Amino acid sequence: MDPLALGLVLVAAVAHASWNLLSKKAAHVDSLVFVWLVAAAGAVVWSPLFVGFLVVARPRLDWTGLAVIGVSTAIHLGYFVLLQRGYGSGDLSLVYPVARGTGPMLASLVAVVFLGERPTAVGIAGIVLVGAGVLLMSGGIGGSGLKGLAFGLATGVFIATYTVWDSRVVSAFAVAPLLLNYLGEVGRTIVLAPFVLRGRRRALAAAAWRAHRRTIVAAAVLVFVSYLLVLVAFTRAPMSLVAPAREISVLIAVVLGGRLLAEDGLRHRLLAAGVIVGGVVAIALS
Image 1 (spheres, rainbow, N blue to C red):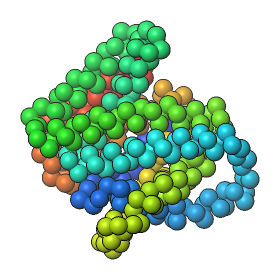
Image 2 (image 1 turned 180 degrees about the vertical axis):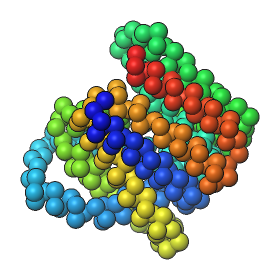
Image 3 (image 1 turned 90 degrees about the horizontal axis):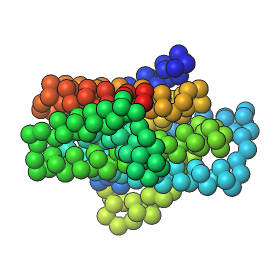
């Protein structure tokens, strides 16, 4: 992989695990409210950069570009909401690695079942390893933990979808990464506004902002930075290399959950996360 692309992906992995830590800390907040507040904060914080980009680069955006950005926004909206609800049901060190690991596994299974692809022995081994890692991660949990595991698996579906889609948006459709990222923030803000700014959620949003505004702004900054770096990496290296390299964030998140949130079973979950990461790397090399 191009050294710059690798550096971008590694920094993105740290930023990604960090904003997930912040999201977990705010898991008691209504999921739609938190996702909307982070998106709205991101739209405000990054607006000067976006305006500067428009003035300097003067990008052209036709109806096709707007359409593919709209699809990306919808996929990411489902991802953020499911992930936040998962953090309300399970540990960071459980939900995060399951979500991040199952994305590549599911993408590979879809390619085999519906697209007629024939995976290599290494690819098959990778799929098996991810599945084994998820099973290992689920060992000894029950009740709400199983619910968190289910949310992690569902979130993995959206991760697989947006990874494939967005890599095409910035490559085949030549949409600038900053344009895709920023308009995604604006799109989530607009779509969720009717659900958040009325009824009881309006009061919840005001209370959540007063209590967690630093967390919200920090998450907004890290969400934007982490994915922008990945999108830029997509323009410099193949998706098959970028996607697995960023999964180092799985190990980072497990450590953060165990050390900073005092979640149980750190050694067990690190082992399971390691198996998942190994499976993702094998899938990428197949």
